[in-house]
Amino acid sequence: MTSILFTPGKIGPLTVRNRTIRSAAFESMCPGNVPSQELLDYHHSVAAGGVGMTTVAYAAVTRSGLSFDRQLWMRPEIVPGLRKVTDAIHKEGAAASIQLGHCGNMSHKNICGETPVGASTGFNLYSPTFVRGLRKDELPAMAKEFGNAVCLARESGFDAVEIHAGHGYLISQFLSPYTNHRKDEFGGTLENRMRFMDMVMEEVMKAAGNDLAVLVKMNMRDGFKGGMELDETLQVARRLKEDGAHALVLSGGFVSKAPMYVMRGAMPIKTMTHYMDCWWLKWGVRMVGKWMIPTVPFKEAYFLDDALLFQREVPGIPLVYVGGLVSRKKIEEVLSLGFPFVQMGRALLNTPDLVNRMKAEEDYCCDCGHSNFCIARMYTLDMACHKHLKEKIPASLQKEIERLEEEARS
Image 1: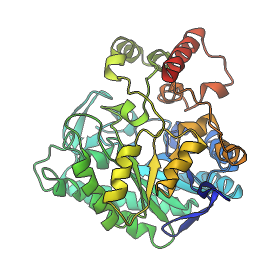
Image 2: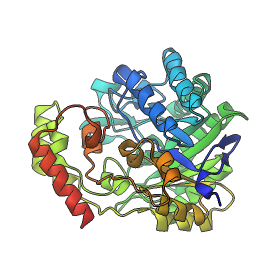
Image 3: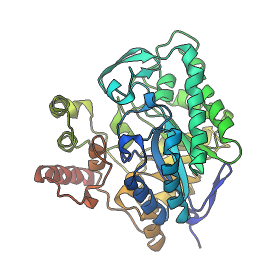
């Protein structure tokens, strides 16, 4: 009897060959903000490895939305390069998606070319930098940029787009009371805080038409006191359904406030600072990093309890589960609970052919050790598993990896 895991499923107008999606985990493989051969090779390997759909991450809809210099910036001149990526994915029978977003206040003038913008004026310690709150008259044009990016995604051959409305990026900054201190009709009540999201979704759905699937990644919780909780995020999910989204990807956390709530486990500070170029940032993170980025224990399917609440409270729209899946057994359990698709990031970095291996072996589990080396390296270089590097890892970093993996097992 065929497992539901390996059966086709639908997201809006798109049929995906099985129930697995490579999540929009940032690859950091686009120097100069353009697609690279490295990006193509990685997504081709995941597609060849059997995944139903792979998601290219995360593409800024404007230059002001860039948070990294190795991040995609959606503009007409990168369409031919992206078309090569989608052609390679389609050749292996997988669908291609791209995550579209704007980082808001999590940028720096050196990267985005201007004072970073966000829902409100303030100072962002994450960069660190001063931030300018977007004026009300700028919001329609910003929303339009999301629609323009969707059109470019279609030209590039993508089958789906994933709008990033979580993790403390721009849309999330409007939604969360932690970052939205506006006094106009875009701040205050949740109804007001959802207005910018509604504007974006109107442009996105208009641009998507009848042939592109639209997923939206959203937070179930911001992951810290003073952020959004379930009472408000359930309302956001219902509104996104009304706005026309074809599926919701249920996540959580703020990368600038609660990054390990998103990813779980510990951040390998020694590894992170080893790859940093900026000397003062390197020493600052070495001194206070473990307090700035506290450990949140990892367990497989760590978002499942909250996601099940959304499943009960927000019927009638496909809900995609993401968060700590590494084994066929747990994936099939999640699917059996009614989630039509699952997303995985680090597991597919560790084992690009994970889906094919699960198809061949019922008890297969990837051997990710949850040291988060890939995340620590990502901020400066590419996102890569330490088990697949060509270069030799310094002994001090290897010791840190072994220690964190031992802690994760215990």
